Length: 573
Image 1 (cartoon, rainbow, N blue to C red):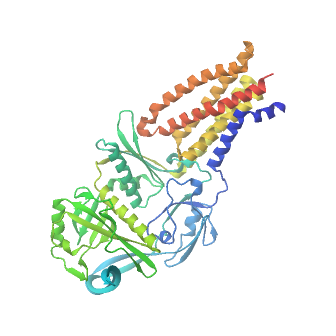
Image 2 (image 1 turned 45 degrees about the vertical axis):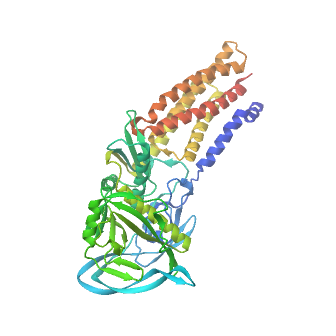
Image 3 (image 1 turned 90 degrees about the vertical axis):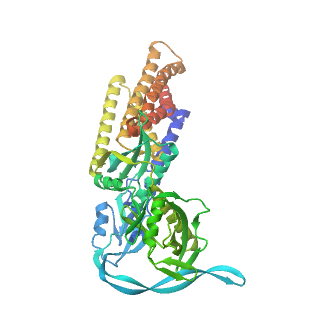
């Protein structure tokens, strides 16, 4: 008992337990976590309009918002959730209870509008900013104006209830992030057609992330990778998306079009030569500013773009015969310019009257944002402006992107991987325990050795939780290497200690020094061997290399000294 107390008072053992405690806090285990976690919220859906936000990729898994009830019915599994929203009708109020808040959303109608071969007159009411002189000062005020236009008659067909817009998955019970190998999804390896410099590659990564966000995908990992030959790659990981969806999505990326009367006037990349993002030619429109409509505020943004001469001429031809609609100081053409990303409309903008029939290359794009407050509306407008600027830029990616490889793993297979990994890990530990016990036949050696191995794994997982590592099969292989190395090093310490008794080396520090000289050589050899793997296999082995390097480092500098201290206390006569 005296020796046990002495073990727990040892400084190196205390340091080890402090790291274990910090790791457990970082992992934040909670096996009783309820509900389903929100992975994504579709833009402009009922859930989005009710105030439910999409989860940012960098947030810790245990901090993600979880749905725990739908209409006061408890939700424990993904199947419970989809069963709870399966029979919703248009206009019905749905109560979504999460671990953070309660939301009331109205189920939207799913409709389809078709044009008829008839026309009708329609009165349009607009809020128009007007410059007026009041008390000798020029100010901008908002006036409500109406005008009559002729539009085709349409018919709206009700198709049923629209999806409320939530994408969910099984609630996590730790902060350890699962890679695609363990949670299912698709991994895509892309390669630029020509090699890019670092700024261009960074811009390409940012634009790809924005494109994926435009399509409503979140929790997506987009990172650069390479190999030992110097080739550049881009690794995209999308949980919950199958291979067919990924190929369809990435194959269409880059098609940006602007249309007037169903005629394409310019295409992103080929026709857009410049997009302004500086403060002098982009931001909140000073002429329109912000105004209030009912209970909501709106703010208008504007920024400049430059077209090629050919695109400018196409725009001139498309607007030559359009009518000019005058509203005091505001003059627009009778047709709007519609912006499409991969055949999906993302905006519809007014065309200034001065552009009618004019082959100008410098034009101004405008739009708006709304919010419950003026500040919220301004922030929303700037966000919309940035998104649209990025869409215009991403139409002119520096190079073509080729799909090199796709790996698709079903969620069921991912769960099977987790179970198999746990079973194999427990069997490996059991075999190691048996072998070590047969070798030494002393619990004073076997018990600290196994405790040290488990401690290293816990600390490594805690570090992975803090660093936002994804735990995939490569990382699990690295953990197995770490455990094997740990056992090997501890056997070296034990053997050198016992051999010191046979050689009558009575100085315990000398015995430990001999052991650590061997361990440090083995450690440096392992680290040097792992460094090339950081870039090998287009970065797919990076998780294995990093896990191994950090794992053996934790062992050598934290766990091994504690084990040596325990062995010295327990075996010293």
